[in-house]
Length: 271
Image (cartoon, rainbow, N blue to C red; front, side, top):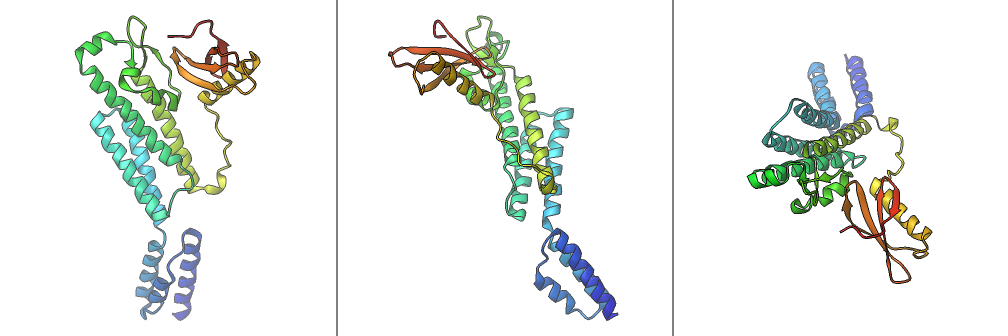
């Protein structure tokens, strides 16, 4: 019986080493139990206590999966808020039990879901006013809703918000879908990295379209001999273009419109 108990103890310890470090004090306490069956049950419980990460990641993955399932079948804004809170709780629990995250992809995913919610409630509040619904039937205006930060963060497409074409806006459904797709991708990458760290290769730094536009605007300023090291300033949006201005050595300004890393010089600044 002693040999069987010793073998079981060794087997459980080896299994535990592959998953998590079981506290030695629990192992010692279990080994002090005289009855072999009780000792075995104690060791099994000890091994479970030493591996909280697997349970936590399962709960975390389920929370992100529930969000995607809910979006797939449709949910109200109230249900969406509850789902985002569930994600935040699951992520907090995992971080506490695991001692942190191997990357910030899951936190970025949660932030993206939260940002999509911010856009959603802005549209609900704005179009609750019947006059706004009549004046801005094409898209949710960016400036009056303070949404420029969202456009820049997720490189969202903009279009004319009103019939006069004087204000730019966001197509709410399309913009939310784009943000949700990014959030889902980041969540899947984050979960995969936790479950199988060895399979994840270091990713090359991503270059956003905004960064590409800034680089192209600087290159064009230098090409036009505005100055050797031009300081480029973003001045606004015009359709799908991002507008830039660079101060030149002759005291004038060079105005440019850029999209997808390609810039052109403007004869007159866009008002």
